[in-house]
Length: 584
Image 1: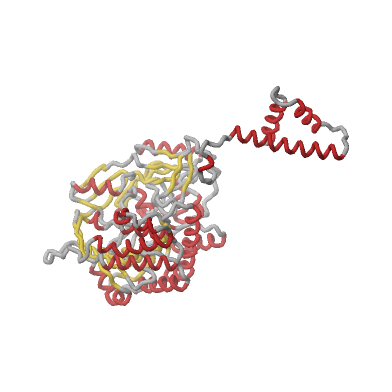
Image 2: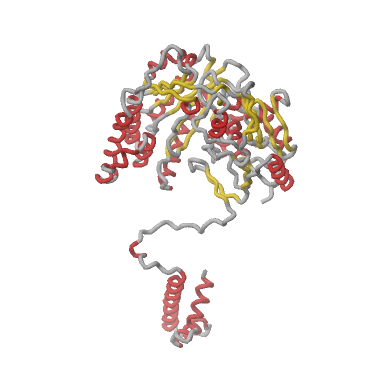
């Protein structure tokens, strides 16, 4: 830059339009002949002045201000646009993002085989990417990714056996729509339905119901495309050990290309939502777990409110009263009033009178409220109490198809940590799930954590996949899943950074106080890699204690010796494989 400005200055100094003495001044300044001290100082400062003027002129003509520049607010410096061949991929919450020049979308198994074989030969990484929904960005890799969005076909439906074979890139919502005409559906669902089938089984995703296992248990067989051995078919009969290991393989053993799933008959459910409290739940918990096909609790910090959601097939003998005591507007009124009051405090009277407020849903109102002051504990408590009122006026029943009823509006972008831990058997639950929640809520209040609602608690039966957080050899074991969250209701980078720091403090306190005592392990799609080396070593030791890490790494070495399918995150979780030099 200095070189550019000096040469420009010299060109202007030699131009006919400039007085001749400027050129002489520059030459004199460049001369090594001795001068009197006063003349030297004078010419030195004159030279500095000329240099400043020249730099200013160069800057002005290189970056001219628009005519209305004086009336514009200053904005942060923006980087130059990314190259056309660089893809930006982020997860749904915007908490993880990578830029990559390699994002492949094969449309067939041969194309996928070719992509992996080439990457294996050239020792390049090609990480499987599903829908990119994982809160921890498990499928993201700057080195390169492969996505199966173009492999989204239903290949076969066997109505008699109630099975379906699909390409793994099909989204859950699309699969459910395709099964409808055959009178079939999936056994259980996670909160949302936008996941690719290959992705949802690989991370050990789950729904809720103490008699229902995680979603990987619905897999009967699959085709796994590997870098070293090409396509292999796995099932309970064909290489059962590898089959169970690969069902929840985190995308590290191969790319799931085709899956055969066990379905159930399409059915309706009646959802009963009501408000309870911790004392009442302790009395009824065992009964509710065993009697309800699907059940979850929504705990609201800093209140005595627990929302209970039970879902069961409609009774042949008794039809529920589907009409709620309160209408939608009545249920939302308390939340709307709080939002208007908060706008007066944090913004202006005029903002509080915006008619658009009445068009916002409950989760949108909660996001807007939190955005005003997300880390002020008293403000968060007021929001939580308003949410408790909302649920009290939302008690009632609704009936619909299972895929519609089991969905859940999780709200906007958020940080989340979800743990899974054993809680006895269905016949003899040990009540540790409720003790866990009691300690967690006490911890929140003791540490003044600005914890928003809800803390969602769900249950599943065991999984036979050894890499599942709910894996067990005992058929009757049940597991509880508890998710803590902090919303990211703003796009302001500084505010998001502050929320992120507070969330990781929240998560750290939970880990220190509860995880080891309850044998709790995080959902694979929600584990974050610690930056501290000691914390990372502790995480690796905990994972090794719970999961068959040696067997998993051995399978990785056989199927992917060049670590094509790996990523920095996977390497942090499971160190120990031989280091391979990858192409840049």
